[in-house]
Image (cartoon, rainbow, N blue to C red; front, side, top):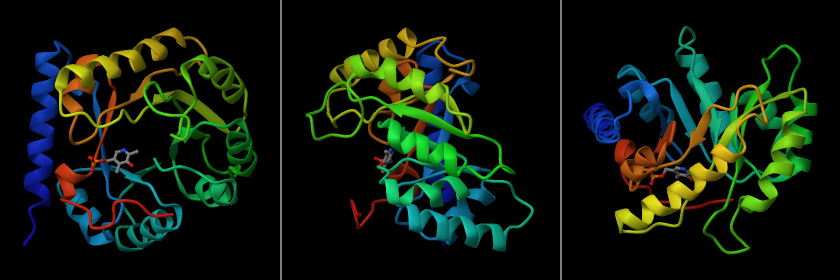
Length: 236
Ligand SMILES: *Cc1c(COP(=O)(O)O)cnc(C)c1O
């Protein structure tokens, strides 16, 4: 017995209502199902309910799942997004197996991904991660540094720069969630034109997807509300 299809349906309904409340078309926000810490079975259940885009935080775990699902469901094209912090020693695996990377916050990582992207694959779709509210030890570039990084990333041949990603600090208060999301949106709008395909604002998770949609997110990353709570909150 599984409740993943029902929870996925409930998240889709939340998204639809959030779009309606924001006066946005219902198909203007994509849904990334964040399957980190859950096995291939959980992904397959979401697939059976029509989900095709999945997010993973831990590179090796993600690659294992990508290969397992390709073997078990050879006819189904999935889209895999790397949404975790990326060390330079993991870039080759990501370049060879993933379709997207959301967490570009250093040029060196972007250069390696570009160099290591196999020629038979389309360019890796990437977002620059921006940190509008965190301390210095949080991932993401400061808004002031985002333009220079975005320009440099846009010039790399193995990558296609699509937009920005952010992980706002958790806040129970919808108004402060929305204020932070609007700061991210302002940075996103300010960078328009840096890439010919600047169309993705990756913002919003289980707890703040309404605020993110109100602010202009085009892609929400939802784990807990689809797959349930995770025992392992973080890992290397
Ligand atoms: C885990 C994670 C998510 C999903 O968070 P939930 O609160 O479980 O919806 C989204 N984005 C990133 C970057 C994550 O690490």
